[in-house]
Amino acid sequence: MTDAAHYRFPPASAYRLNRCLFAIKADAEFRERFKADAASAMTQAGLDPREQALIIARDRAALVAAGAHPYLVFMADLRLRMDRSSFEYF
Image (cartoon, rainbow, N blue to C red; front, top):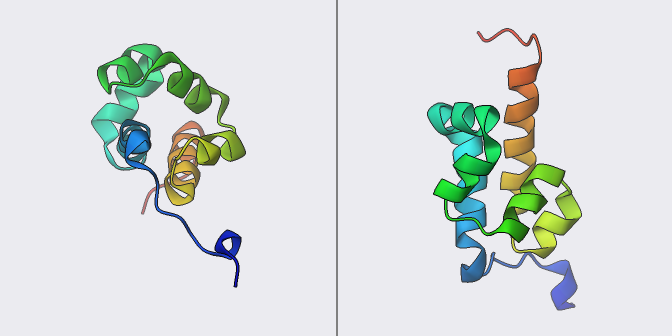
């Protein structure tokens, strides 16, 4: 087996990035702040300009390369897309 076939845990240096993605996914209040003023919400979350640019671009490969957890990248983007759609909650 090669290491490439195995999942690698996100590095500690990507904690703020992953925490922000988690907040977008799971925290409706943060998500509303993010939608209203993404730069301000991300600055308050402690993200640096490079991390902020990655989230705004929603480039999955670049986010994962920067240490973002693939699940959080997917779910944060999905939540934002759900909020923009006419999806009906049950």
